[in-house]
Image (tube, rainbow, N blue to C red):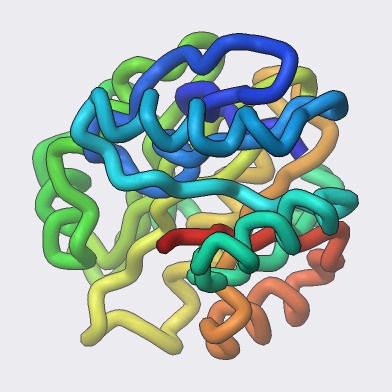
Length: 226
């Protein structure tokens, strides 16, 4: 599934392009073109090192040969994730209670504060700013207090949620549900039929939440890093 963030590096039959600028793995990793060649791996490594980025490769379904080639070079698996999707209409119904979550752009200062508390800093916020096309921050609230935040953007008719963070003291109180429901409503209003997100395999709490909301697993990927 395409990501509505900065494009990953593509290597094999095309040149590497773009850089992550500290914005996270998905915007810094190299991905293989269908006709990738084995000798392109050191070329990709050199290009990433030239930008002061450690070599990092994203392994998608069907990339078994690349996965094996990287393993033989001493690359280990990091951050295996699963992708979830659901119809935006299903998430938006029933809607979040009034003011329990609302879409807005640019993000309020409190959004940046909550993201920072969760380890999402300026580099990842800069990626959000660079995204083109429909995008929004979703701020969650409870008892007149901000409780959580997420970023959502649309690419090719699919709205994808990133950086969903809920403050520890507000967890298990419905804030994440309301943020996702507001994201589903925003997606519908902006022409997207589907809402998607990815989460690490190890994050069982979040995965249980997504399953409880009717979201289904549609794919997986992982990274290789030496």
